[in-house]
Length: 111
View 1 (cartoon, rainbow, N blue to C red):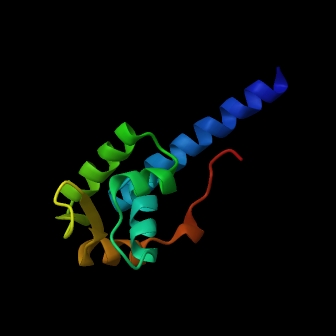
View 2: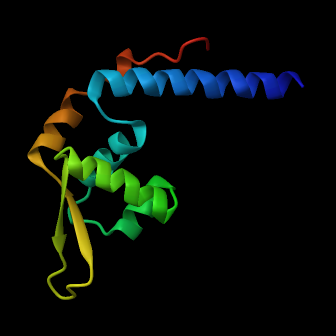
């Protein structure tokens, strides 16, 4: 039972950390991870590729993409060879935000 309680404490601490991160930077951890992934890739990625990188379902990935896109941190473009495919890139605004994030100051409360 102690392990279960400790897992709950860790989960709560991570939730608090993400909340503070969101307040400071205006994005959630998944949006931050999305920006990291897109900034490290030399080519635009499809939502399926992003889903694989993030380890999220396609539905959750779609929500993260939409949120980051609405904030102007990423943009989509049609595929050149196949217009049915959408590809995603990080914008200058997204790259600037990513550079401003200082993860060394993030602390997990209570751990």
